[in-house]
View 1 (cartoon, rainbow, N blue to C red):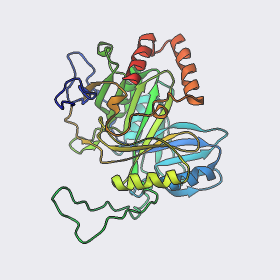
View 2: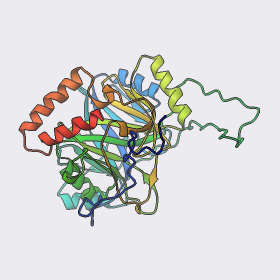
View 3: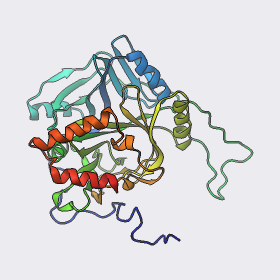
View 4: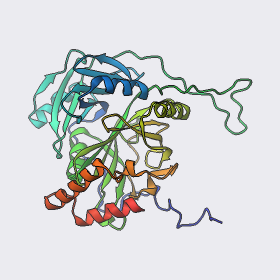
Length: 380
């Protein structure tokens, strides 16, 4: 019989409550240029906007703008759209936009980087400064946006927890319908220049690290993944707004969108499944961030996540450190799939293999030992 105190269980050492060792990365910059408040939106190009809109509605977005050349997708929360999609010859992730934390921060960032401030399109309002991170990804910081009003939300259910009765003489019948996306939560990026990119985001945008992961047996070489949050001082913010991982190619990994609760996530997933969309992994609960998750792929192959009940940290918590492993991705739920891990045979895994061979020949942070560490983590 399994002993719950067994120190050799699959999750031993994976909960990263333990902090840095002497000399390890502090997880924040001493004097960042600005401190962004949140992600504003993500930008994509796709060749088939009508197809993208059909999936978006099934996933739980509401179109705020739909034309022959552009599609803006929003959640029920007030503010800016979550996703901007422009018509293009092929599917491509263009980059994230972050909302500045204070008036004048866009001007301050532009002056510090020698970049020009430009007006945003009339449908969005406001101004932006465009930068490039060390991976070459366009990173936009915006402010003074026109605010979309709130939409009717999907109300969370009332639960009877144990012997605590909150619902009597009433049934629980969540309909199988699209989950109503509330807001954009985070984006995950892979980069061949992880440490340079990490420091760039901390120094320019004032982000701070919630958790670091390192390859098993390679902690002395430093972290290879970080979950990074906005610094809002005493006001708690999402455990991660941006996550970055070292890998053989610079690419989008996935983005996550908050829904009301587990029923919204599960019933919304069944709605997607009924319509033949590709389920990648879930349902489960993550370790870093603690959120309930369910992963899907849109018709263009981009991975998107429904999540709920995530951790919120203020600026007092220092980074946790833990080894990277496939079993360490979830506290409970089915094992991480080959599709989620990028190892499923097909075009994507072949593209990643080619990227590995190319990265090993180039000067970057992804070397042979890192490759062995990544393979070990994926098998664990």
